Image (cartoon, rainbow, N blue to C red; front, side, top):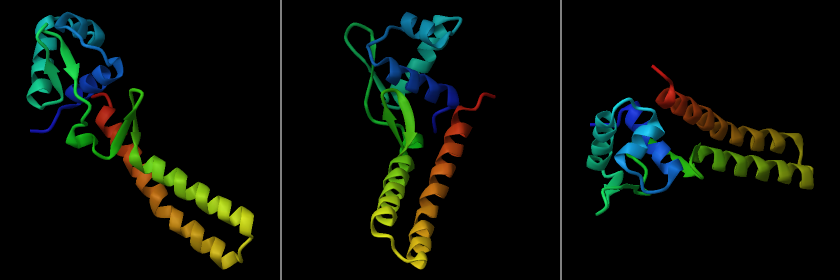
Length: 136
């Protein structure tokens, strides 16, 4: 059973918070009206293996991403598509080569065409991320 949007949002907020948290603290963090709802979300996240409960009753986030986010990287609490890293690298490499070596126009067109799939993948990754976090 895949994670729901709310569970995913809760997991990412917990990743950003990055400290052990109690049920009451999680309730405040998420803005839930009752601790029961917070407990249910934390129980689901624990079942998925995304968080674990310590001996003090606090919940700690594990560093592994859920399968829904395998094509993303969490950097300082922000979710970044992996394709962004590759796209920036290939674009900067091509631009540097073109600027330094002044190749003929057909080589410039070929190298520029090679970056297009990376940009398409980046746009698709961002759209998928927007779908995940779009409010109902």
